[in-house]
Length: 375
Image (cartoon, rainbow, N blue to C red; front, side, top):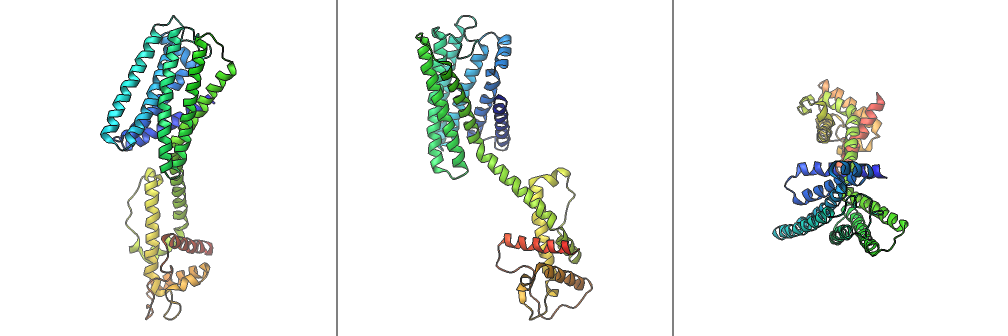
C-alpha cells in the first residue's frame, strides 16, 4: 500500500509539473502543483525508515515537525487553488495572502511547541506519543484543527464546482471532495483522541488504526480525483493516436494507387525525425494528409470511372467495394494510358455527396482494404 501510494503521488506530481511547464502563469495550476509536491515530500518523511533517518540527521522529532509543516502547506495551497479558480482575481489574491498569514502563524506555533518539548517526546508515532505533555497535545491539536478547517472549506468548494461541471470533470471533483471530507473527518477524530489522551484517558489501537487507514484511503481518493480528468483525456488522445496510425497504414494501398495516378496531388513532404513520426501532432498530420491525397486522387481519376448515364456521382457507392476497387484500377490504367475522357463525367464517383468526414474516411478505408485483398 505504501509503495502504491508513493507511486500515485509521484505520477500526479509529474503530470502537474508537465501541465505547469505549458502554462507557467496559471496561478490555480501552480497552486495544485505545489499542493501535490508538498504532499509527496511529506510522505517519505512520515514513513518509519524516512523518519528515523531524518531524525538521525536533524535531531529527534524533526521528521514529525517537517511532516506536519508540509501537510499545512499542502492544504494551504489546496485552498489557494480554489481561491484563484473562483475568478475573483484581486479578491482571491487578498484572501490567499490572509490564509498564508494564518498558516504561517500555525506553523510557527507548532514549531515552537515542538522545540520546547523534552528530548524524543515527538520521536514516536502518533499512537505511542505521550499526549499528557501539553506541548505535544498542542502540537497535534493545532495542526489537526487547521487541517480540518482547510480540508472542509476545500471540500465544500469542490462540491460547488462539481454540481456545475460536466463529466469527466464532475466525477473527478466528487471523488476529490469525498477524499477531502474523509481527511477532515480523520483530523477531527484525531483531535478528539488527543484530548482524551491529554486528560489521561485511553484510546483503543483499533480506533487509531482505523483513523490511519481512513487518512490513507481518503488521500488516495483525493489524488485520484484531481488527476482523473487529465488521465482520462490522455487515454482518449492515446486511443485517437493509435486509431490514426492504424488508419494511415490501412490507407496505404489506396494512397499508392492514387499517387501513381496523380503524383502532383501528393502534398510536399519533408524528412521527419523518428521522434516526429511518433509524436501525436505528426501522426495526426500525416493521417489528415493521406486522406486529402486519396480524395484528390479520386477526383483526378473520377472522369474515367463511369461513362455518362451509368450512375452519376453515386456509382461506386452502389458497387461492392471489391468491384469498386477493380473499377479504380481500370480507371487509373485508363488515365495513365491517356484514354479519352467520357463526354459527360461526374465530378466525384468514389465518395457519395453530403456525407460526414467520418463516413468519407470509412469509405476510403473500405476501398483501400478491398485493394489490399485483391493483390
